[in-house]
Amino acid sequence: MFKLTAKALACALSLSIAGVVHAADPIVIKFSHVVAEHTPKGQGAVLFKQLAEERLGDKVKVEVYPNSSLFGDGKEMEALLLGDVQIIAPSLAKFEHYTKQLQVFDLPFLFDDMAAVDRFQKGPEGQKLLTSMTDKGITGLAYWHNGLKQLSANKALLEPKDARGLKFRVQASAVLDEQFKALRAAPRKMSFAEVYQGLQTGVVNGAENPYSNIYSQKMHEVQKYITESNHGLLDYMLITNTKFWDGLPADVRDELTKIVAEVTVEVNKQADALNEGDKKRIQEAGTTEILTLTPEQRNEWRTAMQPVWKKFEGEIGADLIKAAQDANQQ
Image 1 (cartoon, one colour):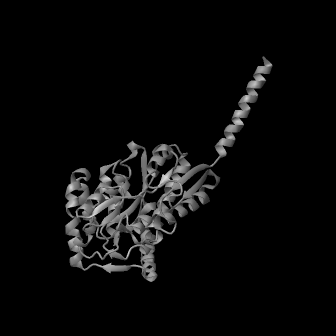
Image 2: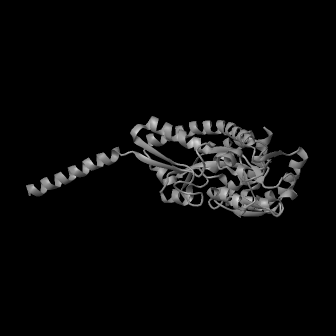
Image 3: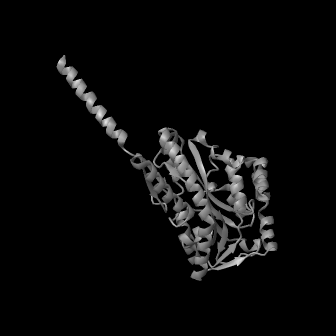
């Protein structure tokens, strides 16, 4: 009897020790993204890792995987839901299968500038959208800016008719698909990692990106013209797996929440500067010409793309579109 009890105690003790060792293991947070480190999102991921490991010590270990090195943009959402990665920051164009309301951010010529974007995202409607997918297992933590998009092609795009018949790379977004169809152009869905090669080989003739994406992926080397259209937004939502996030120890989750808020301020502050710096570097490279639209030309593009709003008003909600528009007027 004693032998059995001793054996049971020894077993319990070994399990207890193993539990202590296990509890001391850091929580691994894999942060995967598809862009280069020298971009607003890339810099944000690096800063998040730095602050999390500084402030939480050996409680967490953050692994950052840039440039689609772990998962490409076609697989990262699935990986998050499966728990293979804990944090990602997809483009706001990637959420239409989880909530139609987030399509508001894809509407062309909705926001006049990034200050309007900021006001809308920080307002009640924007904040509500962060928690609109928790029933699908996705918790939104913050909005991270990249910036407004520019059109690029191998022919000068000054009027909407110039885009007719061209093949443009688009993200997997119904709104962006319709945006180019409104120009009588041909949208082609393509992962971000494939864009350079697609432009180089002529699979697509053009694209839409902020300057930081154009420069970091060297698209300016395979596009003769960039039209500074500022026609749409490319921002990200920093998201996590809801089950993972809710299962974190409260002290760790609270500290990570503070870190996310701090990093978000820095990312959004630096985004404009990074895009302006990359615009300058593109100009200095001399491989592409940057075209500026007159107010009249810009208005022509706006008019050509405006029908897209009406087409998606039912899915997005007229009130949400109006709230976004109202952010332009403050």
